Length: 261
Image: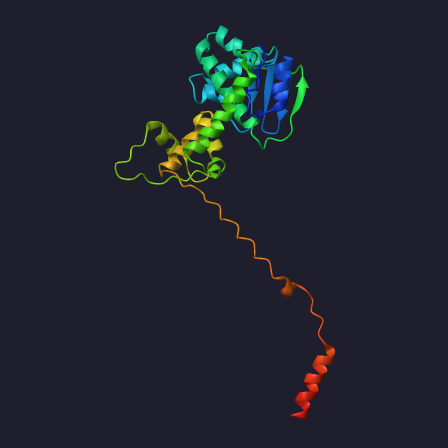
């Protein structure tokens, strides 16, 4: 089944929409991430802005790093790492699927961001993680658009997404959840939301959302960029046009002054 653009909505990535319609297989590369397609459906995604599946499973999940390294060694060359982890009993199939879907939507959010640069497609390319579950391209675009809107609905200050997270003390009686406390405990005024996502082993988008919610609650500083000074009002024409002095008039004024002395 091919993806169909929603009428009235511009495609997040026209090239992705076209590749889905063509049922293409390969890697869609952009500056902020890569989407891997199989028969036009997305089977994996990765971005330097997000923790990878290994971090989500080991730091954020219950997989021992040794088991991950074993899977890479045993199944990396055959591009079946995910299947090896499940078949060897290192991970339940449901947990792998949930983490894999989280990694896809997380990386796609950044890969399909407006400032991610031009798109290139490497036909036939595959990823060593292997194919677990595919997602329609239209669903990924729809979720990417929804996430953008959600961030602005929570707290419309995109500066928070890349600035160091600076905690503020809670007000008397203010409730802070365990999830928020874990994030605030690691926010040292230097780490950005992306840094915190890696430290916590959480999807980067969810960390952005947590930081914006904390800022809306006054528990994190909101960086305010200094507004640019307003443009100077244009000078009137009579001040900008060169004036040619009346030399004869100036001579008469000089002569009159000398005669009065």
